[in-house]
Length: 262
View (cartoon, rainbow, N blue to C red):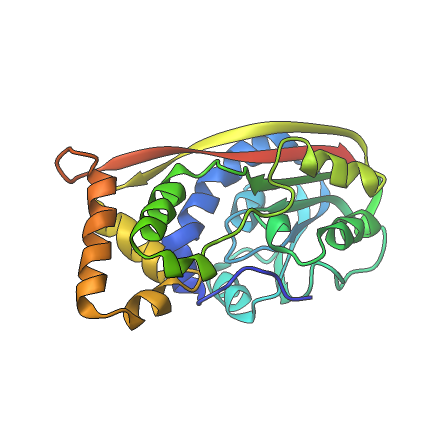
C-alpha cells in the first residue's frame, strides 16, 4: 500500500530528511531498547537511518529492512557491508515475512505517512514473537519549527501553495500513537517525546533541501514567474535570518515515540 510520503530519490531524501532521521535514530533506540540476540525488523527503512545503528548491536542475528521505495532499498544495499543486513522492497501494510519471525520491530518516522497505519501496526504485531519488542516514532504535530517557518512564510506570500502544503498527519498528536498500538493489542505501551536539533550551516543549507527535497514544492516554485520566485525566496530568507546576519541556525524538533510488548 503506497504511503503519503512524496519521495524524490534517495539523494534528495538524505539532504532534506535523512540527516534528521539519522540524528533521531540513536535517541530512539536508547528509549526503545534492543534485544541482545535474534532477528530484528526495520519497517519502512528508507535509506538505512535506523538499519545501520541497529547493526552496531553485534549480538543480533539479522537486521531485516523493508521499504516501499525501491531506490531507497537500493541505496541502503549499496552502503551495507554487514552480511546480517537484509534489505528488500515491500509494503509495511503487508510485510513479506512469516508470523512470529522477530524479537523486535521498529518504525522510524514512517507510520504518519502510511495510508493505513492501523494495518501497518497490526502487521508489526503479526511478525513479532510473543513477548517481543515493538517501537515507533513520528514527528509531533507542530514539532518541526523549521518547517513551520518555511511553510508559514510561503503561504503568506503565495496563498496558492496551500494546495500542496503538508496537512496535519495522523498519529502526531499526544497519545495518538500510544492508542494506535494499544488498539493493535500491544501491551505495556509507553509514550514519550524525543527532541533533536536541526542544524543548518546557512540559508542555502536550509532552502535547497527544503525547497527541492521531498514533496511537491520544488515543481510549484519552478513554475512561478521569476519575480514571484525571487520575492518568495527573499521572504523565506528574511524569516530564516530573523533580523540577524545570515549564518548557522538551529531548530529544536520534537518526535513522539512509543515502545511496547507484543
